[in-house]
Structure formats: structure tokens, C-alpha cells
Length: 135
Image (cartoon, rainbow, N blue to C red; front, side, top):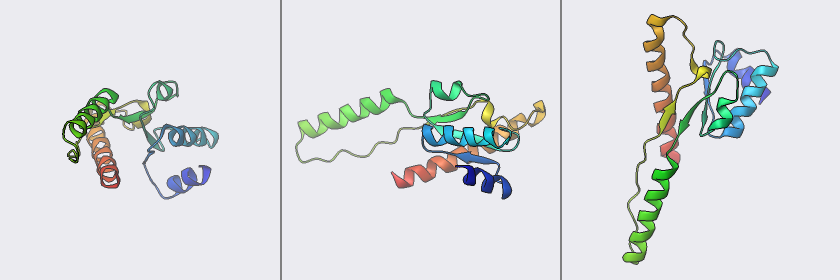
């Protein structure tokens, strides 16, 4: 992970997204070890880290999917299969939720916060789009 962080900073990358809590925490630790300031030098976004991300300082932003919605859709699909053997349920889109925290608060001036938030949302939407293509 140290190499990934070093290379990202060297190339001027401003943010990294990790599709697992483990990778996000490893990156967070690597940044701390190398004295790379989060979010000033490198912003971090993880996937579904829950309370673990809140215990970091700065707290890590994350993309989260509703476990309840996933369970409900899975149950509905299973019931459809049981009720109509041989049918294949249509894939469902469940929108993710961005939980912004301090690891992506890259702008401190109040008047610039909206543009920073918009840039973050665009980056997250691109990451989500890539994830959906590979699922």
C-alpha cells in the first residue's frame, strides 16, 4: 500500500477510492506512516466501513448501500423464483449513498465548499458507475 500512496501523491492524484474497508484502512495507515495529510494532500473514500471509518482521525468518507434494501430485494427475487420456477428475476438497481466525512473535506473556505462537494460527488458518481459496470 505504501507504494500506491507514494505513487498517487507523486503523480498529483487528489483522491483515492477503495472498494473495501480493509484497503481503505490500509491506505489510511500508510498515509499516517508517511506523514501525508488527509485530506489536504490526499482525500480518501472507502466502501461500507461503518463505525470503523468514524474511529479514524480524520474520519473517512464512504459509499454505503442499504443492507435492508439489499435483503428486501433478494427476498423478493427468491420469492419470484419459487413462485414461478424457471423465471430469472430482473436485475435491480439500488442507489448507493455517499457519507461525507473529514477525509474528503479538501476546501476550508466557506465559499468554495459547494464546488468541492460537487467535485467529490462527480468523482464518487464515476467510481459508482465503474463499479456497476463490473458487477
